[in-house]
Amino acid sequence: MRVPMIAGNWKMNTTVSEALELVKAMRAGLDEVDNVDKVICPPFISLAAVGELIKGSSIKLGAQNIYFEEMGAYTGEISPLMLAELCEFVIIGHSERRQYFNETGEIVNKKIQAALKVGLKPILCIGERLEENEAGLTAEVVTEQLRSALTGIGYLSGLVIAYEPVWAIGTGKAATGEQSNETIGLIRRNISELYDKEIAQGVRILYGGSVTAANAAEFVRQLEIDGALVGGASLKAAEFLSIVKQTSEIRGH
Ligand code: PGA
Image (cartoon, rainbow, N blue to C red; front, side):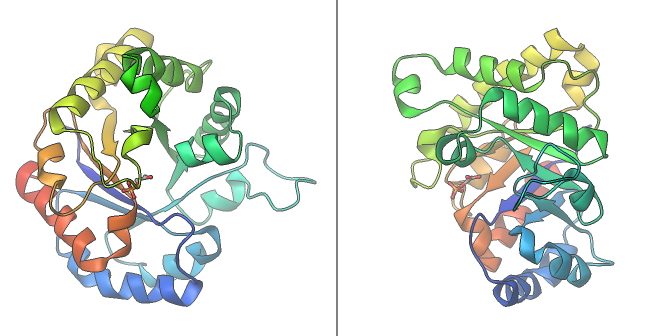
């Protein structure tokens, strides 16, 4: 049985004090919901303070990025060892990083390896761009991104995958539940081929892209979809809480 997960990707939003306010506004409500993994991913600089604030609660913490070297002369980067002390999850290969920071499949692969090595659980993001979708290339692109990210990786302990069609991110134009269920099914079949059926059945695969309280149910109701990676809507305490509650009602029992 896969435990559903709702993860909030705060992206480059909130100062440290704003992050703490946001956590305070959602902490008690989130803590009341069982049967769903609730993960928040604030900016790096807030991880320590937010971590203190959620100590003893059931809320889990994730980072939004990682560097693949463990230490050294890499000015401005954050290493796996630093993150392992602060959080449980790390988003890797988000389309914004691929698009604006030139992250290639090879870099994503190195980051996944680096995270797994220190026991961090990667949330690997994959998804096709609009023109690829329109050209009917979704299956091909997603398969290529997945296989490249997992090259040479022998075990997937704790890996979570987020299928995020790029055209649906931040656009208010979400995919349909049915479309994403189909693609997520394809991702699971690929994992089964790369590893085995049992591993594929155990990996959680989320949908991401314009998820809101109004459409979350459509996704978490699907058999293959194990939750959501939520951007914009995770910055509003009541809305994020509503998504988590709906997921618990639909999937959590
Ligand atoms: P969005 O972002 O919910 O604002 O579309 C999702 C994401 O980028 O993870």
